[in-house]
Length: 480
Ligand SMILES: NCC(=O)N[C@@H](Cc1c[nH]cn1)C(=O)O
Ligand SMILES: [Zn+2]
Ligand SMILES: [Zn+2]
Image 1 (tube, protein in one colour):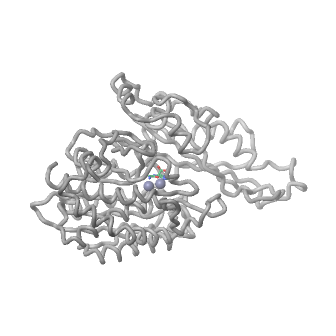
Image 2 (cartoon, protein in one colour):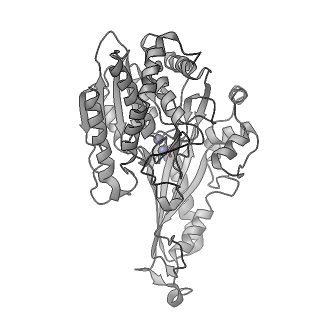
Image 3 (tube, protein in one colour):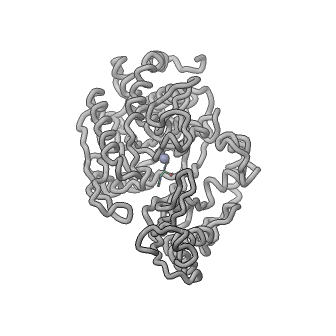
């Protein structure tokens, strides 16, 4: 392309040449159903870690370490389930070069064909230059993207311009359990020399303009268990004469949030940092429209119509989403059962200055108070499953500048600076424990359907993304 700087032409041509191999590598990664939230698939998550280890060996990584994290704590697992390991590796250890740590996750969200996928979620399927499959965008595509960037250098006989450390985890979709502690332990060891941290695990805002991201919401994930009868019952025999746990649960869940997305738990709004005039003005220059939202959701269900309202509610205000009910009948048909025990799941996306502990107290007190009002003989237990902090940084530094130049070199356009409504719990830990700048450099588009059915990454985003990651390493390595 005409905007490609001369220095990158051979590298970008090599990446284009390796495209079939890169797609094949992603296909292998996607074929392993490593869903971290599903205990029955834990061995598949671990298998993905070893798949990455093998790929790293082939690429010539040094000092590959599989870091075990011990048992998964309750409330989710009470069965002595091992956490998946962290895969560490290093490419180069030259004191004259800068060191970039790249982080990504190899676990994925659940996916079933019967949820409404058009193709098998664990078979990467190419249609019209789009690659469909669970993890294609979140986050196997970007993780494999880093490996591809390394391979393109290797194939060209080109030295990497920086020392690279890779950190791949397998519990990001389930709260990054164990990783905080590992980062603390390795801060003065494996991660002793790290100049910058780069994470490719989010998305462009829309579908055409690349972005760099400097803020994330946090996430507190809760469960509410309601237990009643000793076993599931026939509603014809027992309906109307026993207290039903699911009836109680839907009433409790209905007290959490209204249909306009307004959180109904008292005391949360007061903790949200006020919007300043300067912050409000930052939204003026960002390219976004309600049409982008409707396109991403394939619907007309937006709660706000103006760009500012949408982006502010996505990035800087909290939200509460109800995700599901364990133990409730959900299959097609008309089963007349009274479930004996149900567990409602919901999460709250947190923002400055909400404290996780204060929030949890407000949430649990609210649920217990609402349950008392029901005067039910059933038993309730509400608890936090996991939490991860929000993160916000100043994007005016060397790391962001390098990524901005790389984006221009590949896409011919300066990226927008954005925040993101999702969460990557470990971002703040890297920043604090390693004392480095963290950059979020997304490859995928806003309509990739992460966590949803028919998740995809466009071939162009995948391949141009490998070029962007490569060019970023060069700009950062030479100090821009
Ligand atoms: N791509 C980042 C991402 O999807 N993060 C998850 C993290 C999470 C926390 N608990 C469950 N998942 C997100 O939902 O934002
Ligand atoms: Zn992710
Ligand atoms: Zn995710």
